[in-house]
Image (cartoon, rainbow, N blue to C red; front, side):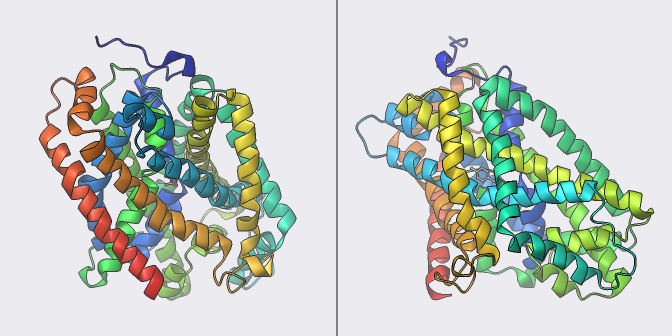
Length: 475
Ligand code: PFF
C-alpha cells in the first residue's frame, strides 16, 4: 500500500531530499535575508523574534502540513487538487486565489530580484569599491541606487534576465529542472551564508548588533507588530497560495509529511534568524565607525540592502579585494535565494496550466513567464522612473507597494485561512489524517494538529486579517 506512485505522468521528485530542498528553497528568499531582519529592527528586536516563533509554531507549521497533505492527496495544482478532493463545491476558488497570488507576487518579486542580479554584477566588477576622492559615500551609493531605479531600460533588462533564468529552470521539469537546480543552489546558499556570518560577527561593534537583535524590547511589541509577524511568517514560508500544495503533489506516497513540513519550517526560521547575524553586526559597525544614528539606518528599509550595505562594504578591513569578495558573495546569496523562490511561484501557475488547461510544460512555463514579465514592468517603473506609477502618483502609493501590501497583508492570510478551513471543516480532518498515516502510521502530534488547523489557526488569522483591514482603511 505504501508504494503507490504519484500521479506519474506529471513527473515527480527523484528523492525526498529533492522535495525538502525545493520547498526550503521556496521558503528561503528575499523575505528571509532582507525582509526578516528589517522587520525585527523596526519592531523592537528580540521581542518580535519571540512573537514570530510563536506564529510559526501555532499557525505556520500546521498550515504548511495542511498544504502538503492537500497536494499529495489531490495530486494536482491548488485549483485541480481542491476540485479533485471536493468535487462540485466552490472550495477550489481558494486555489484560484492562490494562482492569481502567484502571478502578482512574482511580478513584484522579480523586480527586487532583478536588482540583486544587477548588484551582483556591479559588486563582482568592483563598482562597490569607493573611488578615490569620494567623501560622501552615502551620497555616492545612493547615487548608484538612484541611477538604477531611475533608468527604466536597466531595470526592465534585469527583470528580463531574472525571469529568463526562472523560466528555463521551470520549463526543464520538476526533476531535471527544479530539483537539479536546488541541489546545486541550496548548498551554495548555505556556504555563502556561513561565510558572510563569519565575516560579520568578527567586525568591531558586532556584539552590540547581536544584542540589539536578540534581546527583547517588550515595549515595542504592539498589535501591529503581531500582525506583521504573522504576515512575515506566511510570506517567508511561502504559505497561503499553494506552493506547498504544488510541490507536495509531486511527492511519492511513502514519504513522511509531518517531518518534511518540520524540516522546511526549521530551515526557513533558522536562515531568517541567521540572516540577522549578517545584517545587524554590519549596521552596528557603521554606527560605531561613523556615529550614524541607528534610527536612520533602520528606517532605510529597502534601502538597507541596496544603499547602506554597499556603503559599508567599501570600508571593510582588507581593502578593495575584500569589498569585491564580500559584496559579490552577499548579492549572490540574494540572487540564489530569490531564484529558488521565484521558481516555486512560477511552478504554481505552470502546474495549473499543465493540469487544468492541458498545456505542455514548456509552453506553459514560457507563456506564464512572459505574462509575468510584462506585469512586472509597472512595478519596476514605480520607484520614480514613471511618476504616475510611483509614490504620490495616480494611486497615492507606488504600484510596487500596492501589490506588495495587497498580497502580503490580505491575499496570503486569506489563502491560508481558506486552506485551514478546507482541511479543518471542508474536506475533513479524517481524510487528511488518513493521507498522513499512509506513510506515517504513528503520527504522534495528530490531536494537536487537528486543534491547530481547526480552531487556533483560523481564529488567529481572522483576528489578524481584521486588524490589517482596519489598519489599511483607517491608517
Ligand atoms: N518565501 C519567499 C521569501 O521569503 O522570499 C517568498 C515567497 C515565495 C512568497 C513563494 C510566497 C510564495 F508563494
